[in-house]
Length: 307
Image (cartoon, rainbow, N blue to C red; front, top):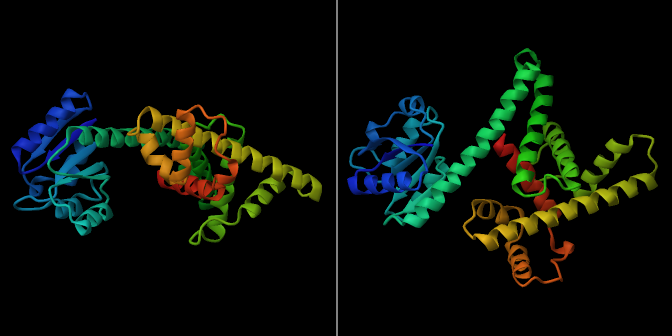
């Protein structure tokens, strides 16, 4: 990973560079003591992956600098400041930063945050590589708009599979059901809208069953397939909860645990599962306590974000 550090305090720049190099996180490819010295195109040409930038600098502050270097600079941005104003922090995130670190710098916090950003970059690059391969094979440049939409739908499925791998359930029986749901939700969004969230679960499972069994399927056959699909999905989600809870027990600062546990599950259920695993309890968290609709909705929107 290539880093660039912008801070008017030489000691801070030196400290950050030392942390990056000592922990083998990457290489510091450049430094600046003011935001006015940064250029988005230059950062891109230098292949900078992560920009660490101070909020308060003498000539041009971090906020204005970020506004100027975007959209030319596509790398990740971590803001560093001694200012703890909620308004400024909120504005920083609205400009597209990944994290906001408050001074004085804490080595452990800096390490944890940079590692999270690096893992995110690796995941996004992995998915981009899959997209490039798919685009090359299918020669997307020669496709019309309707065909492009179809390929975008495949991209959603690829992103979804990557997420299921991160959640520890790519090999579960219910993973195919979940990916089929992403296909359905993508098509649904093209025709209608998801502003009010995804459609009812009953409608989603019914659609999946009809696609699999065909129009000639009887009501009894549809009911059996819907029930089986629901069970597979809930077991897969339960396994994902178990996987994330295990990660949290091993390392509470694990980036997958921090990024996904509270997004996909109610954290009370996560804590309960962690307690059960810690004490080797046989009374596992009830499937009834799992919010299936929330999981599916988050999975879809996260797959969209990655795409």
